[in-house]
Length: 516
Ligand code: MSP
Image 1 (cartoon, rainbow, N blue to C red):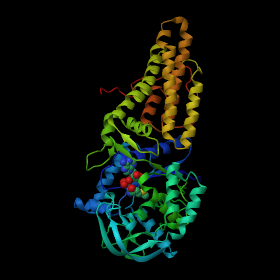
Image 2 (image 1 turned 180 degrees about the horizontal axis):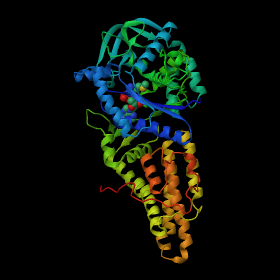
Image 3 (image 1 turned 180 degrees about the vertical axis):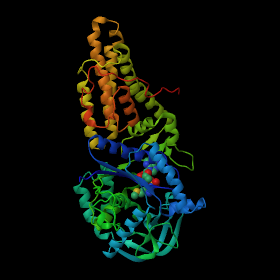
Image 4 (image 1 turned 90 degrees about the vertical axis):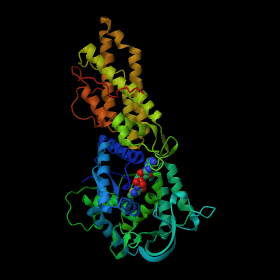
């Protein structure tokens, strides 16, 4: 059984409704998953929810709900959201599921038996908002703590700790020896800088029941629940185990597996820049202690702002992805977030920017190309594809070759730019060859055939290249070309797929113009 390409997103806290940032991360992962399938690979794409911990417990309390019922209600919204985005995830993890809890407990028991944990008394400061302990080092020059920590309380309590001290050097060596482990490279450099200039403090992996009961009980001490991050990170392996992955099964006590997939190690963990330390420092150390291989890549995206300010429910500075999708269509939304922002830097959503890309690149660019190409083929040749002609073949091959390479590198914005190279070339070809003039001159019939073939075939190649990004649009282009099946194999982007005599379907606008 061959190992699948295994890609994950962070699992979201269920303390509210999904917003643009969550949508963005899931779309990145979905496009990479679809792109890999298009390259012919078998893929497993995992997303889901992080349901334990103080944030969720407090959110449930605020609504006077039992935390599980609170999570169940919101989980339905989040799962509907994944469908709204047409994610092709193969599973959806919720950390309150028995299959996950069982694996976390088995992992904790093993690590404890192997001597990785110790119990100690902690006296210091705690931020409930960030669920993190703070030290004197975290104080600002004026003695207070950063506002991002919320209310910081002083406390003294017993907890279990995971020894990290001896782990620092091998991790530094590993990151240096594996330049693709953390991408983009500036995030890698930040992690290296952090590891080289600080001594790792042991990680507190428990919370006393008296303070937090919404968590997975420690298997070796019923007075404690598991720290939410230790629970959450393990989802990447617990779900592999739930699918019978031999690589992680030794950590599972589940006796029956209904499927047998080979998933671990993950190929890509897609995450946001705020949780790099958890994924690039704690998670590798946890995995090493578990005796498991490290993920191949941690792919770190930036954060979206709106109109230059932080997205925030309390200030009302939010974008509701569902409202945007309902108004403009899913593919316009998927296109904008990936075309506007490369994976790495921070981005800024503006409604004007969204409209302008919709109008210029989707309606006037891609939409106009497909619509006029197919309408002219319909009008001048009754919708029947003429003999093969290769004038745009090299342009199409260039876009396909670049897209293939960029898909493998996870360079989604660059792939879109390359694909639009072909869109623009083909639109220019219409202007240069002026088929509407050729159609008036019977002596130009053969030239018109050539032009119409090149345009229709370019549209077909575009449907294939665009499929991971704009699955709905890609399917529409295929259907309008009168082709059956789904354009989901990159190998089909080879020039010459349309054969002479084939009858196309009905052209219809892909991106209706909006009065704005
Ligand atoms: N539950 C943890 C992750 C555990 S993974 C084992 C968590 N959840 S979260 O809901 O706060 O964030 C989920 C993801 O959304 C993170 O990768 C985070 O970076 C991302 N984003 C949250 N707000 C964002 C933006 N404004 N822009 C882009 N991504 C953002 O952290």
